Image 1 (cartoon, rainbow, N blue to C red):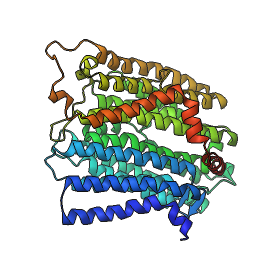
Image 2: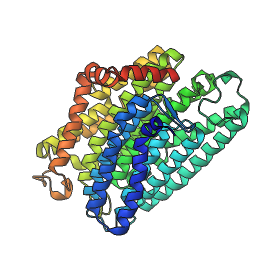
Image 3: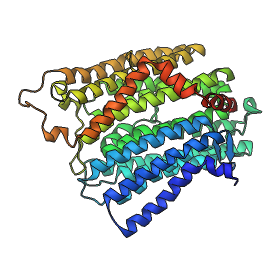
Image 4: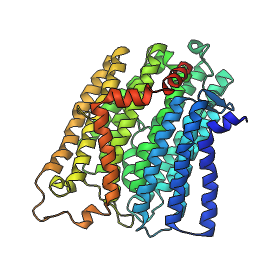
Length: 495
């Protein structure tokens, strides 16, 4: 490998070396503080290593990996979420009965798997990243095995994830049998003449992606796993896993030019519409906030899939920008809620404090926390002056540009349904406090600290800033600054 290729994958090399060093550190000394600090430092180094990697975009690193600005952007987002997850886990696990040093090894393995998945340009790399991410999350979900529903959630995720992996691997074998190539760009020249075997393979691969993105009809595992997993692991599932799977689905769909296939286009739109409606309808009756967010994530992933239903090559660049913006604002709003839930729960508890009816009257007792939660919920609902509204507006423009009237109708109806349960939580926060609770007790507020308030406040400011100044903060700083504009435009041509 040449020097440029090493620079391109330097973040992943740093993470790999850090995992080995973690094992050595655990062997010599067990210390939560040391292992957490080392893990956070490794992720920070990985983030910093992306800066020199910018100069190496549009570079293949062996046939397995390909670095473009889309992959680089998503990987930065994944590492940022992982850094928050390490910080949240440190506070959450201090009260755990189990030894927790290996938890951070699993976390870094999951981050590495997500990074490989995003960079993948070959079915072998996709499967490697998919399995590394999935198996690490299985261990993290069941790590605190004394808690209610944790082992059940771990087994469910293990079995269903293994099933999804098997289906996806069979699909890859079918595509290889039809094309003789395992690269993502295998059948661009004769897309319209793919054999039936290749068509079946593409569908099976999509099933694997749909499972990880919790898209209908492969969504049933999501609420049970979200509820049973420890809160920091739920944060990883809702952010890191979703971002990585969305990125590889985008690359698989666009690099392979599958959007030219009318049958698969119709299948994708049907899945997106069903996810928007089913996810929001199932969330209506949920009182458990983790289950509600799980069903809500089904709908949000349905919204996000709209960016793939393009009709021409000219729509690719705008669809990519819209998708990156929406996944960014969705993750930021989710992080705000998850940070509060993690701070208000304890690892040694029988279960997490996850009934949103316990938030009644929070605005009068914890105004900062309440304001952050309200703005995050309004962003998820897509209310104007929040980033979520701009994100949905971008999705609308993609749908209108490509005349996706069915998807537009489902998006409008689904957003209307979502307003009910998001506003129900907000009204609960704004209601009068329960008479017996003059102030919120430590039992309810858990380990909420100034650092939690600071991070929640910063993320909330970003939500509002992206909602009020989307052109300046989103377009100018993210997509239009030099040299990112040139890089992004060149990278989008690859699709």
